[in-house]
Image 1 (tube, rainbow over the protein chains, first blue to last red):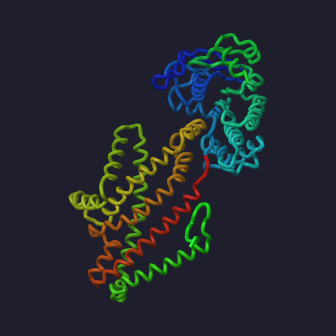
Image 2 (tube, rainbow over the protein chains, first blue to last red):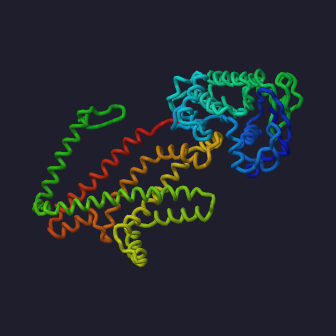
Image 3 (cartoon, rainbow over the protein chains, first blue to last red):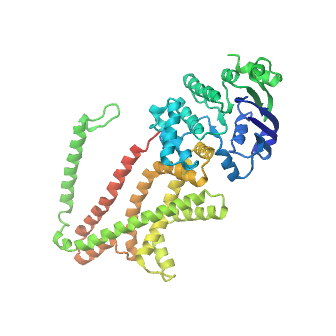
Length: 243
Length: 256
């Protein structure tokens, strides 16, 4: 899979979160975006998810430029799976209904087929026992796994995960990272914003460092972590790997 | 006498609560009987007018039911309009909600009927009354619904968009079901107010319950016997609503 940004700028008010960002990233399985909070990682991912539009510049996914109209972006969003940090699920619907909703209403499966597919996917993630529960009755880790199941159920072209474990305790984090590692082996391309450096080093084929409104450095995971080339990256890694 | 105090650290026993309730009921009844027994003249005279009461009560139920549906429609419409990006729509909604909420219902009924409807040649009391009541209640419902929509977090919109729902679908499958659960208790309270507020329509001669009691009073000169059933008839409608509200409040608490 290949992602390309050409002179992309995105500001919220006077705050330029992405400032004239250009890069190309080609990877087989997992692209991990790391960097300090407020550095633009999540904004970059939201642009890729078609949830926001850049103020200027072009984003290309596998060679196709994202269009600017909301209708076109909606069609695009229907082909990908996006998971946020928390509150992905609709609290009034059971886990099963959460997974079935996009299948039935967006992808036009019959109600029965949608529910069957939802049960299949939940079963695959060892969530069958929780299918009937509303999100309020699930643990944080289970919620994120259901959210990933929902994103995957539509058979997306790729998955975008925005800090999927940062609201979880270490045990639940491991539980969710296991699932992501499993997806990697399924061959579904994943773009992941994460603070889990161990996971990034182990599972990502490409790591990109995003800070101060731009992509500062990227490279194969092993190389990136063992021999970062820019001082900014080095400083960041030193700081977060100290403990 | 410690059992008469219900404290968090030491709740009073069940039997004490029941006994207190019963005791008070008897005590207040005796008190009322002692005060009012002289003013009760003749229940028989009023009994003869029971059909008038029944008709009035049915009209009140009918007005409330229709106004309930209409005011909900106005309320939802105004709440959505107030959130609209299209300024003329948004400002119209704000103007409607803020003006109506700033005026007493008595004024709206008088001005709406004599000042507006009558001048337009529409003097069909009942529908005009229902419309005025619905506009009044709709403004309050609009604010309840708006608060409900705003209480649904940004993340829910993001999730709805991320899975590819259209805005209409997002409202239908994601936002409104949550708004409904959040707002049912305050809405039920508003509906209870609506039933009571319908009594004000008697001033323009809509023959609802209060109007009926008024008529019975002037025909029989037995004030107490005419107005006591009036109160009872309203309570029969409003107490179940507030009981239902309490049950709903307990039911809707789910974690998100």
